[in-house]
Length: 228
Image (cartoon, rainbow, N blue to C red; front, top):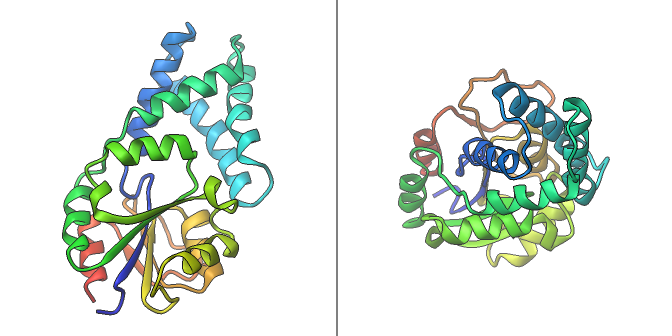
């Protein structure tokens, strides 16, 4: 077996984060009497995504990101609310929603019988631990590494150095990172010098500047790659 250690990203690789986020946003709008619409939700997503890209590049802290996304959203909609309160209830709602992507449970259960699985995530610690603990995939994993706990985040090499020090037997040759994010997962694997599999269900074009060892457009393909 070439890759007995599998390092999985969480959101939009195994967890259906888009579905959980939509539910959380709707609930927050209801609590604070804000208008909910598809246009408004996509506006929030753009505010959020831009700040997470800044975080991946080390341009802002997670603490700043979490509140600033709602501050920017309110500025664009013209509505009034407390950004810190919105974030607090948004995180609570996210922690209570942990839907998996179709096929994620079956994939993890099958791989756990022959591989050691680890979860690597930049998500908010309180949210991710709540979601992971109630998820059906939790028994499949040996451990979970959350950036807030480590003090480093993907794609920094320091994050991966911590993981290598924490996992007995793990080397840069015997593991495979599987993730959907080019900026945190694939860039992180490049920075750390480890093999990677880009989970790319939308069939996006490959960026020329990144090394991508494998590409999977469906989770079933990850199973085939991991067994090589």
